[in-house]
Image (cartoon, rainbow, N blue to C red; front, top):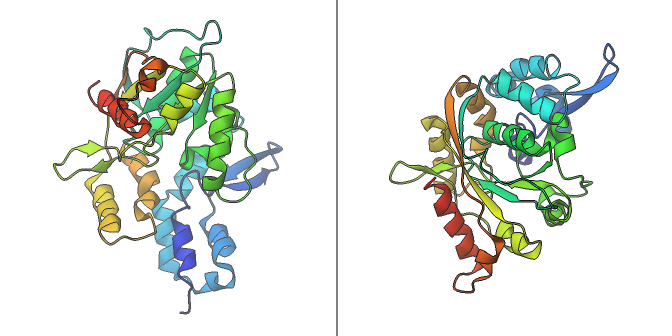
Length: 304
């Protein structure tokens, strides 16, 4: 068909939040977001989009739950921003949460802000739920610092680091980090960068955590709050992720299924456990490198 493989690489970005379209809602006179797979493919593949088989487009729309997501974004989510949007998302997903340790956390009194780090078992819904809990605890004094689907939801704009994206998100990430830690908000991070994977022993665990939250917490003297979020995706998701890893595929095929996984988790019970803050001075001990301290905190999270 002469289709350049580059458009396939772009499919991994077509997810619940990553490839949202901006569209004028004449009735509400507001700019709303929606998923439009046909338009996305035209934008990404150009003239070659016409060669993409109809059944591929239909599969994408079904996998991404285009109709269901758009009904939410253009219906009950209209006009909802920040914590109101998070509340609406958690309600829509019927997330039943048992929360432990949140009430015992210290306040932000005296300009004391925290780095909050969590495992990432679901890849989207967990971030929304944690954001809701933290916002209600700290009066919306929270910023997301994530390099995944959450960054592109319009309703989350008030809670995201205000960085103008020029070039790839990966090049912007260092500036996002600095802006977040310099601000007067608690910072929520998922140090693995991707959602959890199934290990050889069958357990679900994050990939090794990146050290950024350690080095920046030291630099800006922020204590670290560890959080464990229960839950998992389907075996299908983990098998796809393992297939990509085994064959060293550049395309993150598993990411295409995150929306589908989100809907599979509707109505399920989750336990969210907040640990006690770890003093930032802990990480100045030279007996461990920042990377080793990051893994130490990850181990604590899985013991909560």
